[in-house]
Image (cartoon, rainbow, N blue to C red):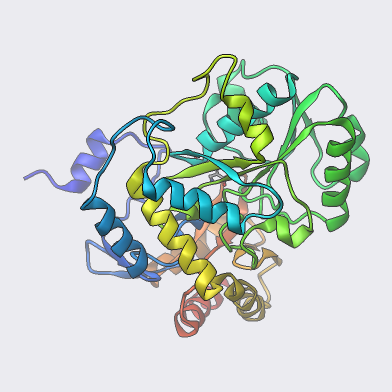
Length: 392
Ligand code: PMP
C-alpha cells in the first residue's frame, strides 16, 4: 500500500525543498498528535489560525449543525444564507467605527485583492502605497503590495503604480498624495518580523490618508481576532481604517476571509458594471457557521484578554542569555536569536522535545511564538521550559 508520506513526496506540490513533513494524526486544544504517536504543543496555531485551539467544541457543533442544513447552494452574494448573514451582523457589532458591511472570501490574499479593487473603484484612483517589510499574500495583487523584492522579483511585472514607504517613519508619509487610492498596512507586521510601529505613526498615517482622501486598509489577517489583546489591533493604536481585511483565525479552523468597510464605500461594488467582483465559494456556509461560533466564543469569554497574560509569561521565561529580544504584542510574539544556524537548531531541538515553533517569511533569526489564546498555563510553561533548554 502506498503510504501518505510516499504520496506526499511524489504527488503533493512542495513550497520549498525541505518541508517540515510532519504527518498529522489528529489535533485537539493546544496539541497536535503525529502519525508516529508523538504529541506536539502547538505554539504557532497553524500560523495564527487556531486561536481557540484545535477543534473547539463550539466550532465543531456549529459545523455539524450547518452540515445538516446545506453546503454550497449558490455563488456569493445572491442568496440569503443564515450563517453568512449572522456572521456579517456579528462582525458589524464588534468592529470599530462604521465598518459594518462585510464581503466574504475564502482566504486572506483574496480579502486583500478585494480590498484593493474596492479602493480603486470607490476612489476612481489607481496608485497604491504599501510598506517595506509587509506581507499581504501571494496572488498577483497582494504580492504587488508585499514589501520584499525577493518574493516579488520572480513574478514581475506585477501591478504598476505601487509605492513602498519605510515602515513606522512619519516623515515618509508625505509621499501619500491625492492620486493614491489606498494605503495598505498590517497594524503590526507579521511575516516582516513581528514589528510593532508607534502609536504616533498610526495616528499620522490615519491623518494623512484622511487629508488626501486615500483609503486606509488595515490587513488584520494575522493581528485580528484577539491575537494582540483586543479583538482587532486597530483598537490598540486608537485608529479606525476605511477597510479592514480578515482571515486566518476568523474561521476557527475553517477557510474564510473578509474585507469589511463602510456601507457607502462597499456600495461601489454594486454597479458600473454589476458583478465586477464575484466569487463562487466566498463565504461558504460551513466556514461562516464556524466563524460565527468562533467569534461568539471570543466575545463571550473575552479570551483576547489572555493575550497580554501569555505575553508576560513568555517574556519572563525567555529573559535569558541567548535570546536577543522578544518582540511583538500579546500572543503575537517573535523571539530573536543570534544567528540563523542557532535559530534552526533551536526550532529543531524544540520539535524533538515536542514543541512546535515557526519561522517568519522574511527573517531567519526570528522564531514565531503565537500559541492558541486558551493554551493552559501549565502547557505554556512546559513548552517555554523546552525552549529555554534548547536556547541555553
Ligand atoms: N496578510 C497577512 C498579514 C498574512 O499574515 C497572510 C498570511 N500569512 C496573508 C495576508 C495571506 O493570507 P492567506 O495565506 O490566507 O492568503
